[in-house]
Image (cartoon, rainbow, N blue to C red; front, side):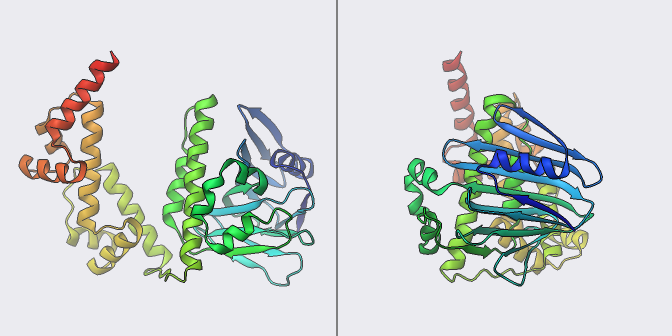
Amino acid sequence: MKIIKINAENTMDSIQQIKEQIGGTITQKWGENVLDIDNEFAKGCIRSMSFDWGVSFVEFNLIFFQNTKVISDPSKFNPIQFSYSLNGSFDHKFSNQEEFTTIEQFHSFIGTCDSDVSHHFNFPKDVHIELNTIRIIRKKFLNKRINISNMLNNKLYEVFVDKQHDNKFAYYGPISLKMADRVKALQDIKTKGMIRLLKAEGELYQLLSMHIELHNKYDSAEVLDIPLSKSVLKRIKKLGEKIVKNPEDNYLLEELSSETGLSQAKLQEGFKFLFAKTVTEYIRHVRLEKARDLMNNTNLNISQIVYSIGFTSRSYFSKIFKDKYGLTPNEFKKQIVVLIEEES
């Protein structure tokens, strides 16, 4: 087993220590640091960003060619870590524990050490790992984000205000496919420079909010009932992505059931769990969002838009559009024209 030991004072130095132990090349640009590795130990990259509100993030996107243990000593740098496994799985324990806990794909982990123990992470060989971790320096974060206390339950609040690092804390979260979408949105930022940094900061704050919200439900004993298996939820998520790409198609519940191999009841249950909507409500929501996008970015008239997104009745479209956005399509279109004229 390959052992990587980290006792750095910040995220960037952590990346540097990993490089010293398994090789690779670090590039830095606009506050983003990327360690590219392609050798006998691993292939892929580790990238990081740091922000002035006490937050940094590290993203592992690689394959280890040996079973690998990462030991993180908190004596110099002991942030709260909010981790999410987008692909693959890994194990975690504190150094004073015997048993590891597995964080599987689409599951999360929140943890921090006390001053006497360290984190131990085990990564299996030949498994593609995509791991997103938000790190928070408590004192600096609370100085910048004093309103965070409104978001925290008692347990997390105690962790955040533990500036002396007297207590260790670990929470292993349930499956969350919504968090996967947010992580992918972070990965898919295409802009460069300062704009990229600002967009990443916004996505990270949203992702952090989702971590906290999930733990709040757990702490309040709200039932985190996962109604379907992971494989079924992945099928439903894929169907949801198909509807977003092709909102104009004629979707019939019976055909969707046959296509996915799931009963109509399971489809409805899955859509309600993932999207908080029935299948029909989700399709309607996607079409309306697409219609609004077309009004903003094309010269198509209302009738052309209606039929291009799969509706057959303009009057019905106008009704549900106003119900959702508070304006008729024509009023919305006129509003856009006024804004364009003002800008020019």
